[in-house]
Length: 201
Ligand SMILES: C[S@@+](CC[C@H](N)C(=O)[O-])C[C@H]1O[C@@H](n2cnc3c(N)ncnc32)[C@H](O)[C@@H]1O
Image (cartoon, rainbow, N blue to C red; front, side, top):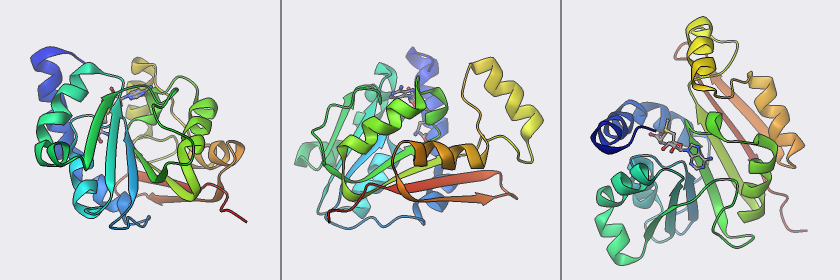
């Protein structure tokens, strides 16, 4: 993530350009009004803002490892932060600053490509999910789609993970998630994958 003014501009643009993709992906999970939600790689903070509107009696946390993202996301969520409904922190997905079994829902939009160790990091998310809680990953770069040639080149240049739909599904299953579902909108080149932590017996 670029820093300084350029970083702010990029984050502001991503708040706009990821909006429809995010709306589409969020249709595949339930966001209860009293839910505890974590948005990983929260970037400019638009998804945190949106989740806070949906979970208006719950709490929404955003984390991002880039200082620039945290600095952009906080001013976008002043009311939620002031009331204690929203908190945004600098942290990595690999070491989440939350207790075991905290969240009903964890979202990650356009971010998992950059995570250092998918299996470990998905396991870390599993740790902070409540039993029966859901993870939702949303992406518009995945291998085997319409814009493959261009995306493949860009992802290689960025040193980012570039997985097929089937590889996404297998990763979540290998990390222990149940009921893994992958939805692909081929026309728009969008993917979302969801899975649940084992519910309490
Ligand atoms: C392409 S941006 C997407 C931002 C936002 N989710 C959106 O949809 O607009 C990716 C974000 O993931 C963050 N990120 C990348 N790797 C991360 C990691 N290991 N832990 C936490 N955040 C990470 C980046 O700093 C960046 O803000």
